[in-house]
Image (cartoon, rainbow, N blue to C red; front, side, top):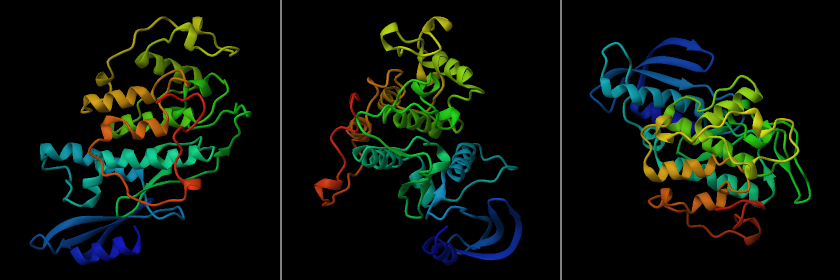
Length: 294
């Protein structure tokens, strides 16, 4: 939590005693000064990175509590309203993620390790992409082939050890998008082959024309499977959200939506678009990478 966030918390909460301390921060018994002085448990998260913001793993915890609070169980903690809740399920969060990614792709940068732990949220609700340890600047003539991306967020072309470019990041975005609704990863494989199998269980076995050439694992190694309704795995997502999700989780990277294309998707029609004057040399591109469709 940054200094501004701590200041606002101190204005609303009076810490009475420290309850406990864990790997991710401290929990205090506190008095809510804006709600009749009732006692609450105040968790202050310790952010280990040098970046300003909060890991999405913490937001996932909030998501679970938000899901459970409707039951009002007497033996489970519940959340008091606040800024974090208001941004958690907003389209704005996904829009910001794609906007940051479009900026990277417009400068020929592939992140290559997008996952919840590498997405930070500042105290005022601004998304920050982090951890560029595996990022790569590429040229149109370059064929990236090294195995990257944490397994559960790894695109099919990476699992098949085929060449890849910016579309790998959009696959990861799709996995993260689904996880925002599921509150757990969509594809939880234990190996490259197992991961690919779990992907095909959901999206179905693609046609021969969409399977990459010259890969060690042929299409015939998998049983024919039909696509499953995505709402079977991702509940509480609306029709526009499903459409955007499946455009991100398209097997063929050449047919996968680009970050730029995703920003124009109707799912974001009610998101307030930023109004800013930027140098054209640094503005997001109209096409994030070659071969991407919108």
